[in-house]
Image (cartoon, rainbow, N blue to C red):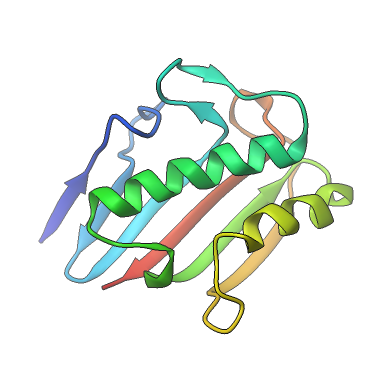
Length: 126
């Protein structure tokens, strides 16, 4: 059985998907891009600000499901430019304890939704 997880504190989906699905004790969070949920606008400026907004969106979804970043077991980061890896990693790392950080891959892609520079998805287990 699956339960749809939705919060107004993260941006509404821009396609036929949900913010997250809870199946048993596992939460599958859709990729989050740097959209500010309260304004509906993209956060633009630099990759650190964009990464922070994406992570805050993920945090809101985790909280709605009764979880924290400590529950995350897998992350996927998609970047439009791998040269931004260090800046993304710097911001991303502030959300995790290095000793218990999740497994992760970072992939450079040609384009992302709304032509943003970063998108992050996660899997968490309670």
